[in-house]
Image (cartoon, rainbow, N blue to C red):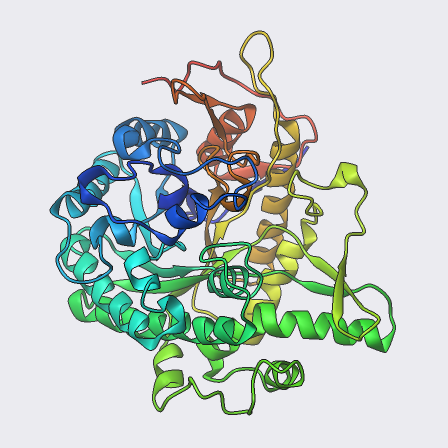
Length: 467
């Protein structure tokens, strides 16, 4: 067994999102979100559930902060619910909503944990969706105003801000494929939404730094390496196509001020764009999007393997046998994290990178003694952290790691059927129950190092994190 240390000052944290854990559906005058509406639509959520209560973090946040303090974390990545702060998306803010995040930030700081908020994790106020949502430019303006409001309230205590989480998911899954809220299937609208999400990032970053000039601002992208299924030219082109619309469609505007030409051509060929100059791009947009970032957040879960389908369009394969996949069906592929970090560093050179999400869904039941032995999750996290450590050794400016997620939660269209948490959440009591991975992560954070042991020693009992 070897121990691999991380640099001094490396940030260890966990990540969550408001829609997935908060609950408090109508508390404090919170407005409806697009996910509230989507979940209430029959057939949209796998188990027929909804996020109305979720993990009840809205009422139990003090308990959750205490758990994070016992884990020894340095930071907590959470999202702020836009409809909790501005129930109508704009206009008069909710005093109760702002008070909630004000208290959460104070509670984190009192526990020695840095608040690391994300302003948008997919929960658009339904009132804005009713007038066009991310398909309309006005939503980007509303987001900048919302960012300014929240920064004014919390910016004296929050040093690092993230604008968006995974705009690809919001645009493509929500507007092209229909799997996420608002459930649309219009590729042209998805391209407009992607642009307005990126534009709103640029405008919000400027608004944050006007309010707090010393603030650091970044954005979180999901990155997935695309590998061809064979050495053939058609499969190589299929991988290029996927990389263009999934990875480079967001990285290139942020770091190069333009959409990738080959991906634009692909969209024209598919009939989703009419011209190389998309009509939704206006003067000054790309400069706003490409304003320098203080950091980039990278979410990584797996890779994709692409082949050319009968019509030449890309088709994903899954080369991993079932035993090497998570419950999401995703291949366990740790080396892809190193590949993602190295590629982003080489091609885009962000000043600093955080791994803002990384984790695995496994459903491991408690035994008769109450222990949840989730060894597969520990192995997943260990092997990905070893890959991250190799990236640091190769010169990647990696500054922190946030495990996804603190606890099992509402996993979007899957409802409560996919479990990513270090802690389970009991259905009736909402008690947080630590899994073996919680004790393992505590020990890793304490040591600031990851062991490459295949049989880690787990210390603790199911009540160790009780209030």
